[in-house]
Length: 313
Image 1 (cartoon, helix red, strand yellow):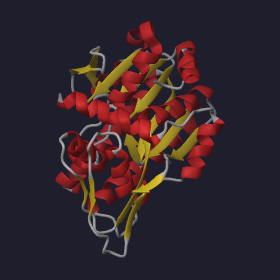
Image 2 (cartoon, rainbow, N blue to C red):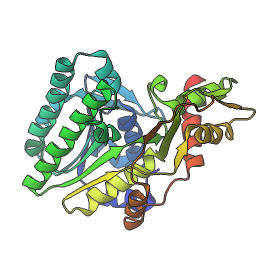
Image 3 (cartoon, rainbow, N blue to C red):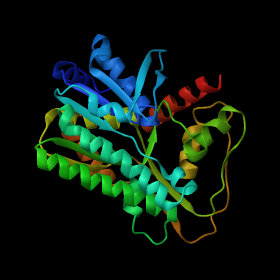
């Protein structure tokens, strides 16, 4: 659920809400949150767009029609909040050549940018990535640098649009998330840990170096995003924070939620560390400023495990 005060403000706000990339993890999780918050208004106010026409299914079985992104510009002009989560992610950067990857993401951003004015957008959330901070890091993989560079370009392009049009923008570098609708579990350590625990296998942390992550609940992040967009006032950029933990500690948090789960940590032999998280103090201050109650890590993990257990069942 969204923060109660944020949900109430959303109901009162009345603007149309458009989600791009609605079939992805953040998109589906946000549709769930909006459905719970808006009740009877949901069908009238929320519009979903993605790579193709298909029916999306929410956690309670509600069906939502996703229309192709090409149709976005045909929406009638009216005050609109846009939640832009459409992007080909790092796994696609690993599988595609650079020119095709760049062209595909540029086509997505141009479709959205060109539609914002005609449809009446006056507030936008851009789901960026912590990878944007790795765009110029020589130690990062080629795919990470490419993905990060294009995410950073999106940040700047949509921030410039908001400034030029007097709109509100929340541009968020997402690092490590937890919550329902997690997809591509093979790409996320947290999902792998949970699936192993649920299957009765030991949770294995195999990395030979320290790996540090900070997880936050999607519902916490989106409560903050909506609070920023509803208040208005220019462009706000922020990183997600959370408690920075080595993966062994994360694995033990997961194990505490699954009866009988065990953790095995390989010896740390490499001198370097893989550290990937935002400014936790700045993020905590922003939550406090907007009156958003942090979701405890154990609760965020429990909600993720419940979702994965349901999917497996």
